[in-house]
Amino acid sequence: MRIDPLTRRQFKRFREIKRGWYSAVVLVLLILSTAFTELLVNNRALVVNYQGEWHFPTYAGFKPGTTFGLDYQYETNYRELKSRLQSTQQGWVLLPPVPFSPYEINTYEGQFAPHPPNAEQGHYLGTDTAGRDVLARLVYGFRIAIWFSLILLVTTFAVGISVGCAMGYFGGTFDLFFQRLIEIWSNVPFLYVIMIIASIITPSFGLLVLLMVVFGWMGMTWYMRTATYKESARDYVMASRSLGASHSRLIFRHILPNTLSLIITFVPFSITGGITSLTSLDYLGFGLPPPTPSWGELLKQGTDNLDALWIVSSVVGALVILLVMVTFVGEAIREAFDPKQHTIYE
Image: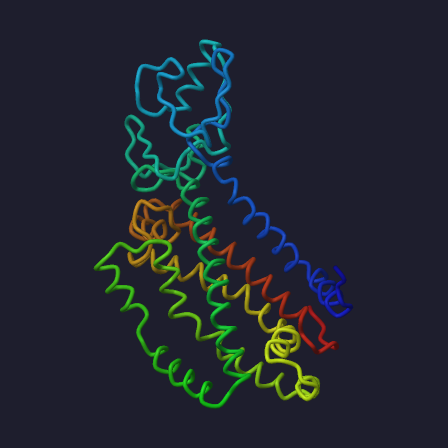
């Protein structure tokens, strides 16, 4: 695949902005790590070697305690099993770095939740008010938030770019109709709709994405409409039209590629908007139902229990770090695609 010289120069400029480049690398690694979250944070063992037999409970599913010689039928407590096998020398257990599930309630004799950070117990960021590990809920909450924002990004951009490009290209009655439709639809109070729906049914991940798309596609539409109007009036588009180029060729080979810089510069800020939207809805109680791991739900617990500062400080710190990295990436992309070659980044 041959990359044109302009794209190479833009990518080179992006790499020269170190904080944006390093933030992008870290974000990509974090997103890729969500595919293996269970290998890092989980109360199921990665590997169990018991009496010469190998077991892989993380992805193999439920295994009762009797499988490993314990006297109960419910699912094995692998932390307990690890201690038992170490003492009896019947095998060994390899646990994830954080051996807790985001749903697991942990109780300790003489202690009441929330428990402060304790490295000996494995709770590096403490537990929440129900005794669930904060770090585990942060990690799984990040996976939900980032994929929510990415799915929301793709769907809103697909709808917004399609409608906006059609409005700018065809104009006339089609453009006027969608202008009036967007003006009316944008005045519908999104939060009230969410409150009404949440009072009737329990919001799910898919329902929240659908609602956010229904109310969130208008922003990109206006930008694409303006950019398409501008590109349609260019000499190269008019020349292609006079040579008999079809509508699809004009749109997909000429107009859309030349509006790519506009689309890319909005991507990081749209991801930020998706994360903060889901966090806000969860904080207000109109988002994902409990006990789903959620940064908004953790933030609500933290603000309601300020004596347990490890809860609010953990989620606020994670939010700040993530949003700052996304902002750095957006800033670098905007600078890299800036058509003014004389711009100097400091």
